[in-house]
Each structure stands twice: as C-alpha cells, then as structure tokens.
Image 1 (cartoon, rainbow, N blue to C red):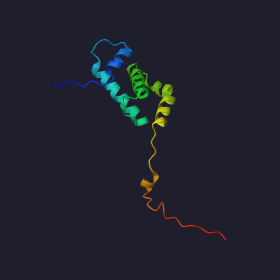
Image 2: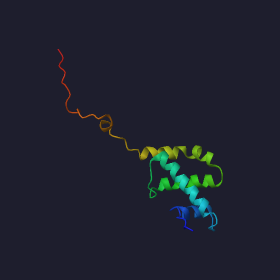
Image 3: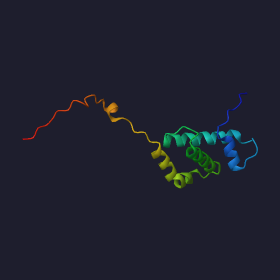
Image 4: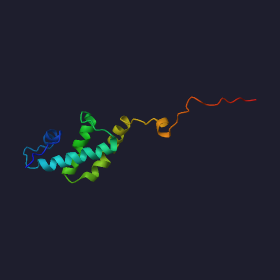
Amino acid sequence: MEEQKNHPLLGEFKGRMRIFHDADDSNLNYILDSSQSALTRLTGITDLENVEFKELIIERSRYVYHDQVEFFWENFQADILGLSIAHYVPEDDSEQKGDTDSGNKEERTTT
C-alpha cells in the first residue's frame, strides 16, 4: 500500500483545530488540497510562503471541516479580493494583439 503524502499545512491546520490524532489525516489532506486549489484559482497565488494565502487556506479548510463552506466566501470576500489585486500581474497588450508597429506612427500636420 502506497503511503499518502501529507499536505504541507496539515500540521498547522491540525494545531489550529486542536486535532491530536491521525485518524482523519486523509480527509484533512483532501480538504486542504481542495481549499488550496480553489483559492489558487481565485487569486493566482501558489506560494505557500505567502502568509495571507496560507491563512485563507487554513480558514477555508476550517469552514469545510465544519460543513459551513458557503459562509466562507461571504466572510472572506474582501480578503480574497484584496489578495487577488495585490498579486495581479497585467499581461502586455502588445504581445496579445501582435502589435509590432509601435514605433511607426504617421505624423499629422494641421493647417
């Protein structure tokens, strides 16, 4: 039987939730993985070293654990939006449109 790889935040989550046994580790790993995926999709962040991102993963996991995830979005909407905006990286429009004439503009003369 293959040994399960634990989510990097499992120990921290169990400490936060005061869970001192290993019986639910499989379920807790699933909850943490799904929370991380959902928040990455919304924020674009993947770095678990980001303290705010890590806290949101733990908080969403707490709501899921207590079957209250529908309240997480409402209660943390501002945090999620703020984190998304803070880490937003705009795409370069000229690359998307294939604009290669940026330096060849005609000069207009007015009479």
